[in-house]
Length: 461
Image 1: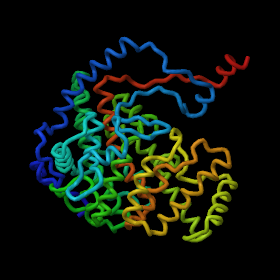
Image 2: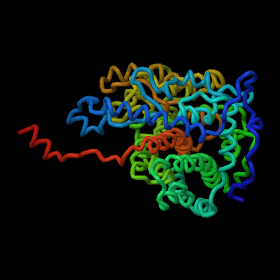
Image 3: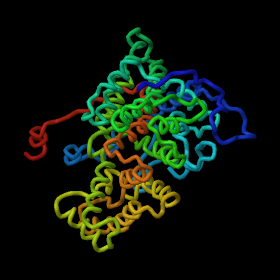
Image 4: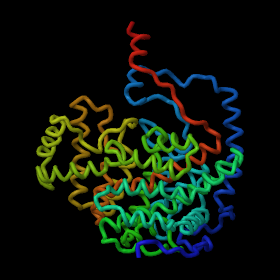
């Protein structure tokens, strides 16, 4: 059996093993109902702000920025997160350490549940354990796939990259779109967000199933992904469907799926989902397009590139090189015209907080692992070398510098699959943003472009 079995998972929130909140007042747990109250307040606040300040300039940009991928040009509004060059990412105003402390955890667990961050991204409010349990139950209920998508996944050739399979299956789920059906019936645009919400909840719920089938087909001889356990959380079920039951690995995945969700709106995957969604394409089409962007080696595929480079390091100087041997290897990499993958970021000018929390996880759970020690040694040496070279504005490690080594340690060694894990996580941020795009009535994105000839005519002559 290669398809997931559906059964009723709509059970009481207390069935999911979450930390107790005795003494807290009962709060509503239905996310859509809460959004229905939050959205009108935000619409009014933003409408008033735009009316008063809408004609004010956000800044100037240069010709080099227009040629250079629009870096540094502020031209998007993304409500869910903000990336500060010096401080790093904040999700609705909360740093990663704050999220680790405040967001609910599984029973006996130490890492935040991704469901909790999704609630935070959607509402701006730190959820209660009961609210997080409600999200877990909703996703458990919606996790099954259309039969034609399962058939398609099972007929993909093994030579097709996991990300190509992932993107194609997501787009094929478009048959289930409530937004598409509602739009065709002519529903009022003020209700668009409700249908985008339903599609987003359905899609997020289905992503672990899609991803697990891909993993099983490619690496586990097509064995069954089994069934969803209604008493467990999203990350636990994802790991179980892939065939991983180690509690420590599940904790790692809870952390991984939380910290990869969002990185403000200008990165390729987030911007693509926003852009395609601005044409009123449904979440399946919009997110599928975003995943095609995430598959690029300069974006989500970078964690695979890091491991390839580390493998070359081990082949060249061994698993336990001296600082001098490793320093020479890094210089050889740079002098050959290559980069040290996992270091540098388009916006950040410090060590990525997502790297730091993964390093802390490793220090706690696998301090003596040789590959972790090698990553730590690179972390110690590479920034100074990159500064000495003089080309890097940010010589510090980013999220991709660490994640692959952790996954390898727990036995998930298939590097080509890593970006699929990234994609499952990234859905939480970009789809929360897509709900808000429609709630705020943001228009189709259509920036003005110019030709080089026009620029030269205006500025060079």
